Length: 280
Image 1: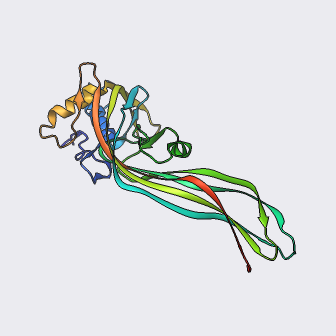
Image 2: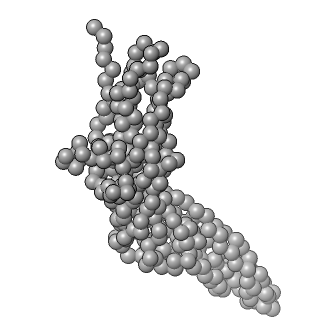
Image 3: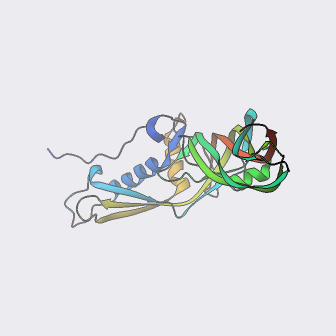
C-alpha cells in the first residue's frame, strides 16, 4: 500500500507553544506554501511528490512592509530613583596648607530596555515591531541618549537591550590641611515599567522557497502570495477566533493589534560629592 503524502499540519500557531495570543505567522506561511506545493501538478521527471520531512521551506520577507503605529502606554510602576556611587578618590593632606587637587574620571553605566510581547504575532526573525519611547519619561533626552528614538520588540520572551552610557568629570577641589578629602562621582538612575498597546500594519508579498533537503538541496519551487490574502484565508477558517483577530481593508493591508510590556532603566544625572574627615 502506497503511503500518502500528508499536508503539513501544525498545532495552533504560537511561539514556543506557550501562548495562543501570540500567532506564529512563520509557521502559518510555511503551511500555506506546503499546501500550495501539494496542489501543484507534479513535474514529469519526478517519480513522486516529496514528503514534508524531505523539504526545507525558507521564507523571504523582503517584500513585506511592517509598520508600527504610535503606541499607547499605561504606567505600571511609579518611577523608582536610585543613587549609587560609580567612583571615589581620596586625598590625604598631611601638610599645614590647603592643597588644590584635580578630580578627573570617566566611567560607564549600563542602560537597559526590556520588552515583552503579550499579544500579537511572531516570526522566525525579528518581529519588526517598533516602539517609540513613552512621552512622560523623566529626563526624556537622557532616555533618547541611552536607547535612541525607537525600540524593537522580538517576541513573548523577555528581551533586554543593553547600551553603555559614558559619564565623565573633570573638576578641581580643595584638599584641607590635616584632613582626608573624599570626592565621589554618584549617578542617579530611574526605572520605569509600562504596558503598551498599538496597531501594526502588514502589507506586501511573502515568498516561500522550497528546497529538497536531501543531497544537493535542489530547488523545488518558489511560492509567492499576498500577505493579506494568505492571512485572510486563514482567518476565514478560524471561525472562533482562536488564532488571531485582525482587520484587512480594501487596499490589502492587515492591521494587527498587539500588546506588551516595557521596562526601562537609565541614568538621568551625575553629582560630585566632596567631604572631609580625619582618617582614611
